[in-house]
Every structure is written in structure tokens, then in C-alpha cells.
Length: 188
Image 1: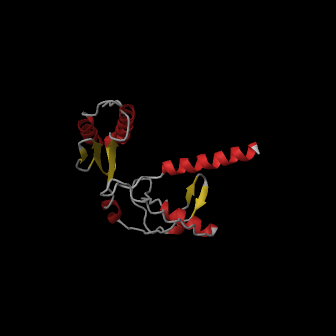
Image 2: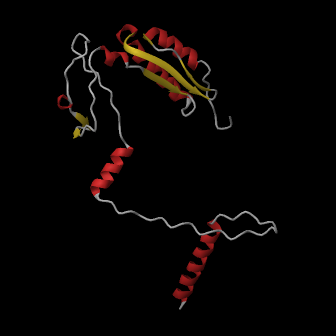
Image 3: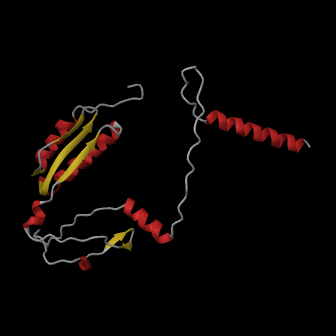
């Protein structure tokens, strides 16, 4: 009998807890809360393993732009999808789509933007990321294969510089864009 009382108390306590967690409706003109409408039930749609995999891949699609060059840096022409193997952690993956761009048109459309995010990162991480960007821009004595722009996201907004293939110029621009980055604390 004591066990049933404990079970009853547990059910009543759980019910009260659930009632307390529900959002109160805004008061009516008489100062009383209007009854809240019950939430619409969620329906689970059964899917096959293949449908789940397809939905996951669609939501997590990665776009890779690849430029194949020979030893002298000139683009290799005449390649097809069969000439490429895509590996993820050593496992072959399907290539969802493939489009070859021939000649100088491939090089003309390439433009990268490196963004230094000072809003969603700590000052320590920003300093580390800045050093890595500078190291990347300094490779090959600062001569870059394609134009790159430097961008910075800060509390003041997003700023992006002009594209350049000169890594030294971009390093100086990165320094200018990051000069106002200061450490923030929780009280800030």
C-alpha cells in the first residue's frame, strides 16, 4: 500500500512539474491567462536507410573546386570525372557532380577569400589564426597562384579588401584589418 502512495505522489509531482514548465499564455483584458492551445503532435516519417543517407548527404554536401596542374603549374586539360578519386578518411566517396572547365577560363574564375572572424573567437585564437594565415600567404615568397582577398568580421561589421596575388601585400592588409582586435572578457 505504501508503494502505491509513493507511485501516486510521483505521478502527481510529475504532472505538476509538467504544468509548471508549460509557457503561460498572455493575460486577457480581464487580467487572467487565456488557456493555451495544445501543441500540434509531431509525426515521424519512416524512411529507409537509403533515404536517410540521401537526406544526410544533401544536408552535408561539400563543394570542392579542383585545379589540376602539371609540374610547371599549367592547367591539365581533357580530364574527366573518371580521372579523380574522392576519399573521405581513406574511404572512396561518390562524386555527386563534375564539371570540367578548360584553359584559362578555369584560372580566371578562381578567387579565394580568407576571413578572420574576431566575433566568434577568443583573442588567443584570433592571434593563432592570424599567424597561420600569414604563414600561408608567405609561402613561395608571397607569390600566390590565384587572387586572394582578406576579410575581417568584427563587432563593427564585415570588411573585405581587394584581391591580390602578392602575399606580402595581403599580410600588411591583414595586419591593418586585425589591429583593432582586443581581448574581451565576459563582463565586456
